[in-house]
Image (cartoon, rainbow, N blue to C red; front, side):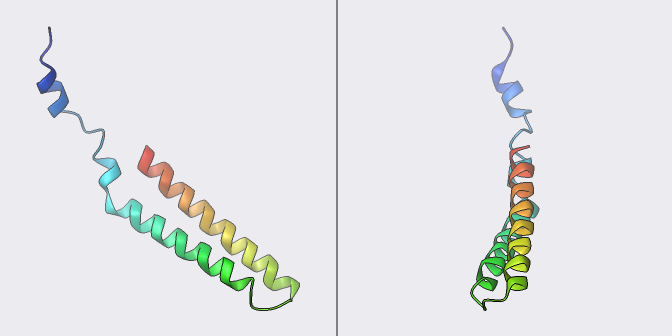
Length: 72
């Protein structure tokens, strides 16, 4: 039988999830989403609605990329 303690100690599977860069990217994405949501309340102008939706989508994409990097 193989030595399970030795193979468990050599595993680097969880080291990538602890990288602070992933969580900084996730925080930036959440802040961008919040800016996009807050822009929706600044008026009835159609262009503001379009811009706020695009900013929110950009924040969602950044946040999903950060989550994907954490899970990888």
